[in-house]
Image 1 (tube, rainbow, N blue to C red):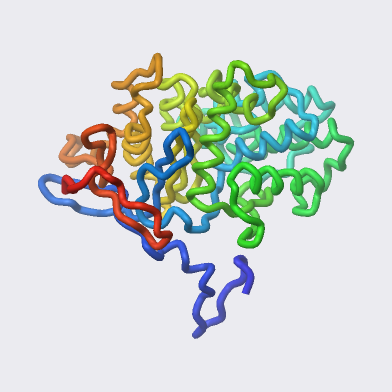
Image 2: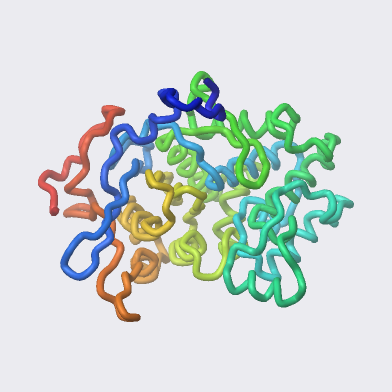
Length: 376
């Protein structure tokens, strides 16, 4: 059975389809009053600057769909194929934007530079991601459109890449298109995941989506961020260019009030990207990185887990970092009667020396965290 096949009634799903649940552990708790009301399970890894595992929760070797966290890797492939954009628009090419006016104008600009327009986009029509922007869009007389969908920057950049490389634009979403083959190669290279376990499907926006492991996703973000921080590096290096563009223009990567934009604003040189179904990854300038998958796909625990994981990775010690702003990213209140009566909190925390006291070994056999006794 392929990863996209649907089991018939009375049959079991394939092992590949159920692997994501194996070895999952608590990543976040939802506290209301003095009780833990809900728990979000998942898989998480924190890597140090040398790429060694600093913290493993669950099984970071688990194969996942990286969803929109893969966009920076797709942007690397596009640059290598000849895409040429200023940093502001390159950041938009790696974005899941909120649909603000500057995002929509940027998409049009990417297309116009390639001699194209919005009619060439093939992504799924949708309203803007941000609720306020969606209301404003509808009040202006619009409905779901390709331009306003959060992946339109990536699709515009894919089209511009095809023009630069001399490839067909009408078929750019075919998984055998030269562009998508280039994306596949970049994903395999940057994650370090072997091709034997690679799966392919279609993402929500219509683009081909290649699987990664949680660990491989973290490796790729560490590599990107380190390349972006290398002042002596080749300015034409695609990985470095993508990282520098994202770090310099975090508002183009997501938008107002969203955790990846907030994290990149708080910590210079950090790159971060959220994805649908509870996926997130971030890299620090020294090459440290984090990645995680929330098992139930909920976005609710994502900010708390991201902030806690970045704290473990040492983000607050990056020169110029705003530690208070970074911590604020993880503060998600639980309300009762309009008042805060609890919070969403990570199920792990930094202990002495910046390590975590609650790490366990998942099915991958990755090492236990060395700091000793757990706090909860």
